[in-house]
Length: 242
Image 1 (cartoon, rainbow, N blue to C red):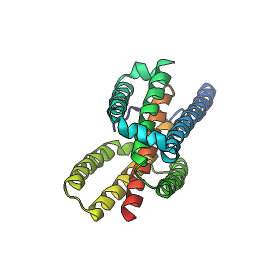
Image 2 (image 1 turned 60 degrees about the horizontal axis):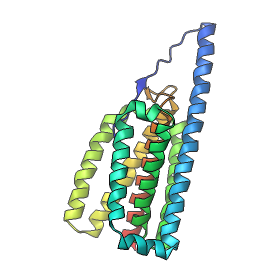
Image 3 (image 1 turned 180 degrees about the horizontal axis):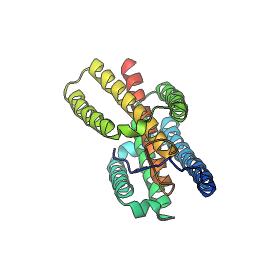
Image 4 (image 1 turned 30 degrees about the vertical axis):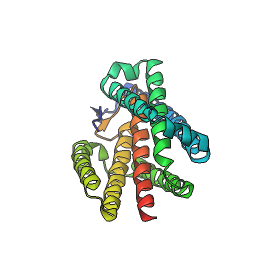
């Protein structure tokens, strides 16, 4: 997952005007973080609503099974929106186009998650949601408190993600429950690191790399994808253990 960032300089000096600028910069960053989390909460609530619809409303499951083309339509829409927002800087910074693309992306992702979770028991999905919430809360607090700079790990995370992709292909070819659990555990671990990494990119401050305050859509998108992937891998582990 490629991330756009820039290097912050923290050697402002002792000039009063610089101190004022520093205060303004911190205020902008706090507002940016609040905006990102507000968008993220809306995405997660919408996704939870769609998952609940698939879990508790049987006619919805039947309708989707009888119209399997909807899955592929949602997949194509998801892929197009993701590429557009990841590659087109102006698109994700221009309001309201950025919100429209994020809304469409969230709807497509929520639909695909609803389809994916519908094959599991309600208790398994609820357990996965609870564990994911606890893990993400703990990792977020850790990212805000730790002095270690995870923003320098971008290249390493891309490398291990490629290894995970190859491992996933092997897990598909070699049908083995233990291998599937190990793959899911590694996936959850890697995207947990991504969550810390993306959180610190959003925080800015003393971290070497950070996102521009104009990239609130991109920041929310990154965090949302991290959480969704953690949830899917945890759900896979729970499903494999049953």
